[in-house]
Length: 545
Image (cartoon, helix red, strand yellow):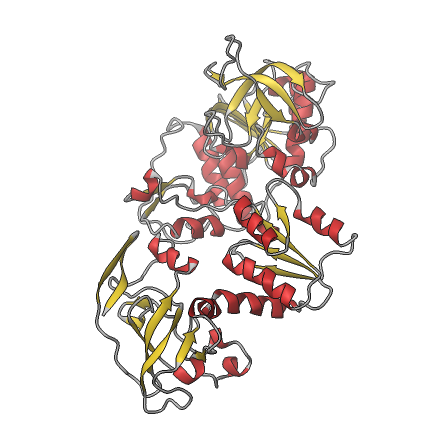
């Protein structure tokens, strides 16, 4: 028979494959008349899921006619027109008896064979269907094959979602995601009597189709879906919600990484990941989904992610480098860093001509201005120290930066502009542009102008988000959530007189002041913080406690 088979990432074949045979007495053989391509089929195709054997027949959506029946099949005969769901089910185990057939103790997924074990798919002339009595459903004579095909996966998934949500007459329902499953979930909600459905997505064409289905569209990139729900419900909120996408509404503001199949990276044979101690579970999972070998580099003694632990630093490294080159071999910085890493106390005093531990009251903000980059632990400390150092520099009295004398650090990568998170920049010709942003002429640390110049030759201006500077006056932890859509279109920066160790990680300065504010969720966290902060210094270090 002819079949669509998996060969490699982005490589399928239409080729001859072995005809399926009855293996168990509960099997049937179905001659496929219609087969679907699911979004899940794209995961192995693009390498986001790995392990599929070469030659595996693809697909798990099937409508067809039974041509052979096993000896123990009770409910079906040759000639019956049937639809198969994406998994097989016995119909009698605990999960099947509870209506959770996709969790059947004996079930298999069509179209997944790994290490020679599994079930071939249905994008072929014929398909073997195990556990036929529990798996297959008859197609009514009045129902078109193409319509019946929807019941195998996306329609059954959608209606089950509506059932789980408890959609009933008169309900306001929110459907998150307007792909095929989401569109059918909209239809399922209306079939159950919903008075209105708010459809949430960011793709205009999908939202337009949802509107054709009778839904009220809400684009989360150009508006706030919660405001739409609030308005349509007179402040009461939704009666039911169906998430028809991997990313729920609550997570839409958080980034995910995916490998662009059109990018150069798609052809890369190796991904090199630096500062690996900062890579958490979610990012690691995204990176591993690329299906590429990863070489991880970093210092396990440095800071973990702000939330959770490093995903790659829990295991023993294959190679550990022990010779230090950043600081001079005789520098006391190395001695203090080792003490911090091992959890040994660092006493007050002078350790060499350039390294000392002092009490916080021993130096003034004016002296700190001359002492190099100041590093602290907590954001609250950072805000306070920035204010004090700006005042000492004669720049206080306004929460906006004043010009070239200010120390400004970038908070977001903007690859099109050459801006990198953690880069220091210079601002000139600052103009207040209203409540959300100001504009300025921006130069990098080498004096290079950032941004396209105007046609008349004047240097171009960047629009810079105010919120991070306003935090130094009155911190509002809700501000950045409120402004997240607008922030995406603006440059993000803040005062950089003092920065946190998390922001400093990966950078180095000739002279550093470490303001020890006791950061550390645990003893090991504290060691990592102090070690990271100390090792940012190349020559001079003042530790303040």
